[in-house]
Length: 332
Image (cartoon, rainbow, N blue to C red):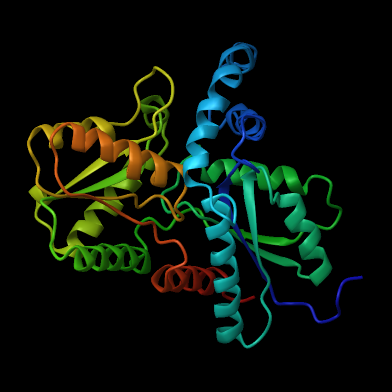
């Protein structure tokens, strides 16, 4: 039965999702759900069904599973393990600040823990107000809107809907920019020097999506400009790039891998790469950037490649989360 001591509200952190294990079968299950979302791939469903089931899910899971095996930890997927750290740390911070229990839940758009699971947990507390915080600083229909769709679908069976507030983006929030800058400064302090170039690598989307009105590239550019300003960088000291393209159509450019290859060919002596759009380290940062793109850069002739970790559960990131919750729960 729900408790009589209802919390004033609850918070749901949402990230993309992860396979339950670094195996082809688990990856196939995850990719089938992720890539079937029309927000992610908007091709006509009959055609896409044939491509997805006839080609992609037959060949891609084995290769992706091997990549997951490289980054898997004792706690499981890095994305999920870090997400749990963020959840617990934010819950403790809210308890300290509000002087009462504020439930914080972690959910994934695809896979587990699902939003339905979170809903069942929330009903046990009696909370009737929910703040949804997608962990995507820059808005895109492929990520934040997909969270909204999935959340709305999860509420369809519910006879008693909670009061809901939804954070769309925080790409230029001062605490976010400060947190990014602090992570860069700490990394450079550990390295003992500033690099010749700071590469800010964001996840890409098809160019067609941006032409249709997705504001994602403008959000990425705003974040990059604000971070460069906060760090006092000159225009020739940093670059904005896009990673993780999929399929044959043009995606947002410049591409991260091509850029790092070109920097390597220029005999660059030192490069730092940060991925500001990722709130937690995952396959795309730990394997794609730290391993694949490092190799591309070094084989092209570059020296001293350093990946700057995502904000993860750092104090500065928790400060940002707390400020977002405080801002968006006024009156609750």
